[in-house]
Image (tube, rainbow, N blue to C red; front, side):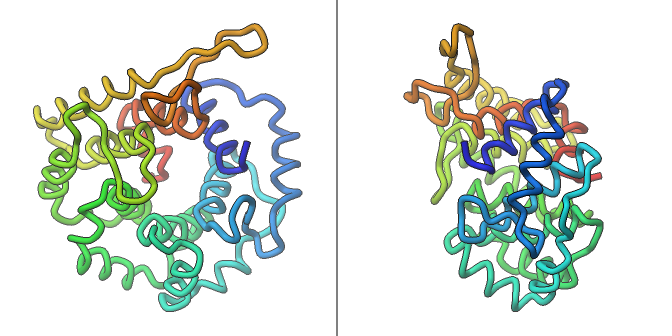
Amino acid sequence: MTFLNLLFVLDSFRFLGEKIPEIETILEEFNSIQSDDGTWKTGHEHYVPITAQAFMFYKHIGAVPKKSLEPFLLSIDTWEKVLTHNEKHERGNYWGGLWGYVGCFVTVGQRPPWVNKYIEAVHGRFDEWSSDNHQRSHVVISLGQLGESIPRVKKLIDITISDQAPDGRWTAKDWNPAVPQTAFGISTLKILDKEGLPEVDDAIDRGLTFMESCFKIVDWKGKKCGGYSENPDDKNPDALATSIAIGAQLPLAQLEEWMRFK
């Protein structure tokens, strides 16, 4: 299991209100693979969202990583540095990558020094990120983390609903496993809709029905184990898909707390 998938598994314990087993051993292992600049580069040359998610995990459980993230934050303290780093390591995932940079600052209680440039880009490039389910969901989450208003909410709701496939799933241009993308679509609608619009409720229900079709039960070491597969035809559950699917089914207040809106 990759480090990123493990982080999602641990999130699932919290979503379900279950105690994380052997937490001290887990934290000791996490600390042992943390880089000197405070980041985790496991699984990628430098996938910044992993570091953001790791720090969020520590924060959620009330622990502190062994090493400070400050050396890395100093290396991305201008918008130009962030764009260069993002282009090098997250080509094709522009807004999803930026979610990681925003998250790194937010989870250590700092506001990105380039936040105004980020907000300017969000407004100026609305058509770009709003048209893709994956990128759209990450911008919405980042704005929530920053406490910034989400632009053109009604338009975003309309786009998100229109992007839903007839079978209830959502898709994306690049990273496109069905269950995670559907969970992103559901979560985005929950966050955007403050009026309880019937068309939003219908879209969410259809998305949940699709995810139910991807719930799999398998035998593992003599036990029945259940979880969500990435796609309907997959035979086995997937750790990351399961965690994101569970998260999408949380009440809005808990969903926002998980995404660190508050």
